[in-house]
Image (cartoon, rainbow, N blue to C red; front, top):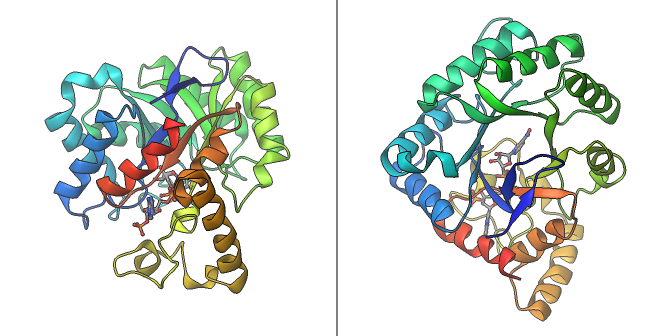
Length: 300
Ligand SMILES: NC(=O)c1ccc[n+]([C@@H]2O[C@H](COP(=O)([O-])OP(=O)(O)OC[C@H]3O[C@@H](n4cnc5c(N)ncnc54)[C@H](OP(=O)(O)O)[C@@H]3O)[C@@H](O)[C@H]2O)c1
């Protein structure tokens, strides 16, 4: 594993991080979950990316991760970067989502309790809130750090103007934004125009999520929709993506991967890691074998 400095901070992140959005909820096989996390750590992955609402049920990914951490990795806490987020719908009523101080303060306490931790390494505002003053959300992040509940803070999916204001506010409060988390892969390149250069110019690291476009940038769907695949159970990935253009692009990618002696997924991950502004790439996996294959992307 290689480790990259996250922006202008002291923190190094593993080039590949493990994400808990899917496959770690209560419906998932606990043994498979454990094997994925252990495979990650044994291969040098130190950054584990969670959020309050990951499940299903919301919260269950944090609870299940906490259990694995306690059973398998408790003596390694200082070798691990645990990140969580708040902003998407988590609990009923007006305070269970978005970016109010009320919501963020409650959410970090809930997350720490679910994971059995005293602090997280990174706490993110998961999405911009168009109605809460940005200063309120940012000040809550600052106070969460000052209370010792998080070591660093980050933002996710903020448009450039709000990101600029967030960077400025946090810098002024001496809790600089560590990291911007955005969706970036071979099929979705809009972040290249502003977000990635802006993060770099502000000394903020950039972390890419859904680097395989939820499995589309692998061989997963080349021969139909496999049973149990994300496309069979997630509202976020549907067969509408499987167009003739998609298969045409995959044919070309398959040819290039073959030429380079790697898989399509490894090619897609290496393509993101070519950019020095990228601090880490957060992959998802439904098995340790998938993760093991993807980790080979960093070998070259
Ligand atoms: N900040 C945000 O708003 C936000 C949003 C989304 C995600 N994220 C973060 O980013 C993480 C990763 O997102 P993602 O899960 O969409 O990432 P991804 O790496 O693009 O997709 C992961 C999925 O691709 C398939 N896959 C992975 N490796 C494969 C391989 N070698 N061969 C075949 N299929 C393979 C698996 O699908 P199957 O399940 O079908 O096997 C796996 O679940 C999340 O867990 C979360 O931590 C953040």
